[in-house]
Length: 67
View 1 (tube, rainbow, N blue to C red):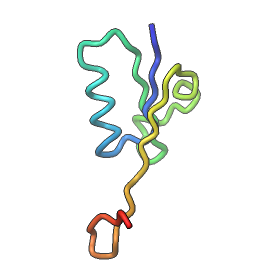
View 2 (cartoon, rainbow, N blue to C red; view 1 turned 135 degrees about the horizontal axis):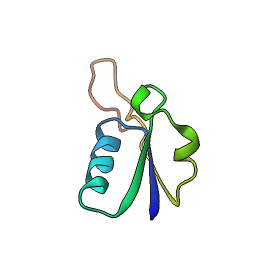
View 3 (spheres, rainbow, N blue to C red; view 1 turned 90 degrees about the vertical axis):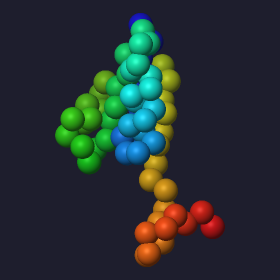
């Protein structure tokens, strides 16, 4: 069985994690040090494919900063 890891389980990472878990014959591991339910780094690094989902920078008013 293929193992896929999603590093960063925020808005984007969680959507990827849920989509890959839907009806697929994959082992999908989430890792996010800020979330205890996704804290097993040793399983996450042992995957064939990694998705790295990092936070999008925000301005002080909360809008996205894509400059």
